[in-house]
Length: 127
Image (cartoon, rainbow, N blue to C red; front, top):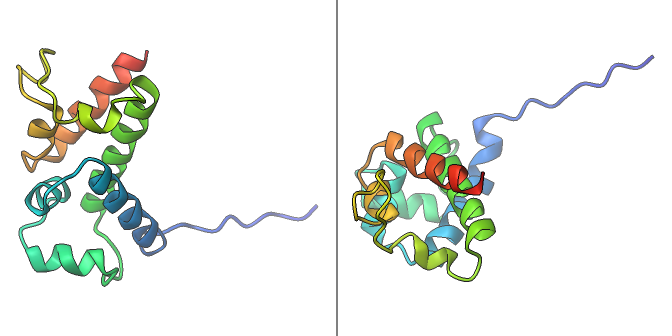
């Protein structure tokens, strides 16, 4: 009986697809450069531009975690409110997690935990 060897996917393998997906979502959500930087946890505009050009060997675990949350938020919204999914992130929300502000206001705080809170909220709405 042959043993299948699973390829270990590392951060380097995930970097290109993760960045392409993030920047496509950022475009759909009409995120400004400063919003993109905040969501990604970046301090440097030049780093953002390098990432847009694919000039990064491997993303940090933090950046991959942030992008993973964004992808989950995007997917959840496409399921919950497909007609208005891309606009939803900017709409004020009365839910306790948002206190009348938008999900994007929460996501651009710079804290990865806020991306988690938004993701959990959307997952909770999906049931």
